[in-house]
Image (cartoon, rainbow, N blue to C red; front, side, top):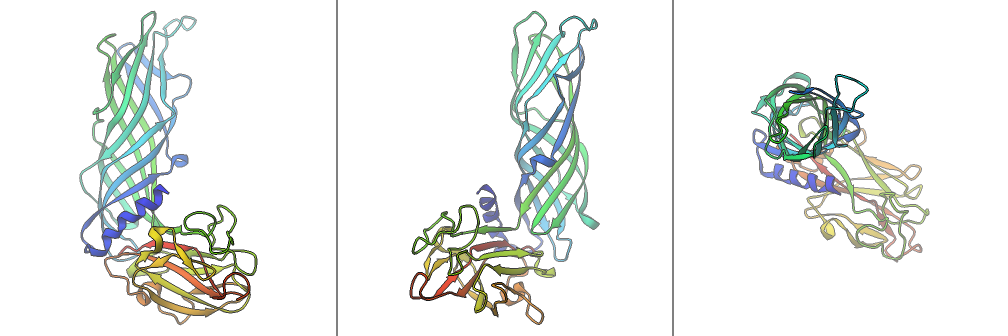
Length: 369
């Protein structure tokens, strides 16, 4: 759900020229954002206790200036976010005599980092070079010297020295993707024990901003289906139809107005019959949908009919050969905009309501220039 909230922010693109700067909240891909840490101190080197590996999870904000073309980025800047270290960092300073206990343990607990940078240019292939600083939004440093009680020092407000990041910003399918190798060092000091030193984190921050998201399914989320014809939980499909399944609207391609390859594909409908693909400027029922025929209407606002297609094997799509692209047929502004999409199709009149039609789930698309 948090990703859908993030997508809503891109509505601002409707009224902003392509050269304007817009803040995008990227979701950190935890499984790909792998880091290690190392440290030195006045008492000796800090080693993992037992591991020095961790991941980042949360968000990172990017202020982006978009441009037309297949490479949609002109420039960018890191402007905050909240990326938490998972798990906490645990280290120790070994005794010179290995059979004796460590001289101290050093733990970094609850660390949350926020990246910032001056503006940087994005070049061919999405490559950029930025000077990035990491600031701790939360966390504490706990030092436990051998034979002494632990002491805790707040880390909030501590910042790393600016570090060079040679990364990439790309458009992959229906998402903006950030790949940013990071090498940053934090100085620390513990006023009680007198220990001081540096902790260095090295790894790659991977994050993405989805431009396409499904919403308003008939699977028990949002508004109820009209006659108990609820699709399986988590299926993301529209309300059940006379075939015993709900119809699914999926999107492929890139929602770039100047290089539109977007394709709407509907499946799970009656084997034959017609399907109308349409575009809206808003969401019915605040995204939950409203009952309409045998299903739910999701796309609302100013509605544009994109095209009517004949099903083959219960599936159809828009556009096909000879059709205008989605952005052209839907008159999407050159600067980009958020639009909603859905497919309406014929259903058996004896299945649910006398209306004899049903609909797919809705899809929200954040178009970029």
